[in-house]
Length: 325
Image 1 (cartoon, rainbow, N blue to C red):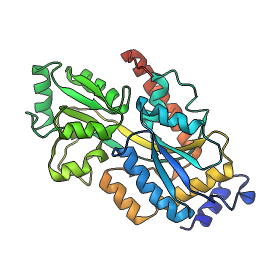
Image 2 (cartoon, rainbow, N blue to C red):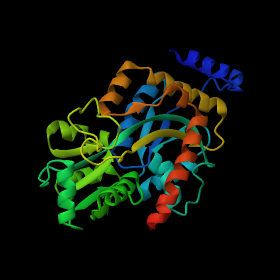
Image 3 (tube, rainbow, N blue to C red):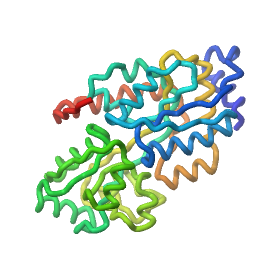
């Protein structure tokens, strides 16, 4: 589907102002801010999308990694950028919802960014270092019960989705372990491979290469079904922990006040990219499910943000999670 056709479809769905759209946009490179260090799931998704967007929009999309404070530093940079369509903010439920319940931010995640599109979602994976004494999820839980507070778990930042799922895992299993925060999943992965930490509960796409190489020990995924790319890994329910389900979703935003015509063009470019068989295959390999077509609107992403804030912020408050900026 060509970009012009996608825009025409959006016009028919009620997008006003497209007749006078900025036809020359973009005329220079676009920056996509990834609020984590290189090597993690969000960075992987961003770089793949940037390649496809360059082919569609005709301008380079440069990925800039700005890590720290569970992603809020990078998101803050995007908020303060000109609202001209040349700065994009890619992120997840962590960076664009959870941090609002963790930090006294100098901006409003919902009001100070305009949504472009929901990209997709993926389950998390419970994975341990190669030498971990347990071989399956039941064994992991049993070992943790026998060795309270002795295991260390790497997280992409205090209050990130892996941290909250770790807290939920402790409550669901009656176990205790130590959390070790990092500036993103990439550095945490390095320490897991070096066996400086014991396990992680993070997006499944982080671990694809390591699982293929056999350098990590998978215990279970947190989705409702097994991954097509890793059918040998059971779901948490299949592995003996019923009801332990969660996914990480991805989205794209721009600074508040970005022209609607520009947002529409970005939305159309990504919607077009989602039809690309190579992209679908790549996302399938990563275990990421592209958002359904009716979720690929700015309004849908805004509604998702609000619903997730209502779900997670009370949990953050109840857990009394404290963070320092």
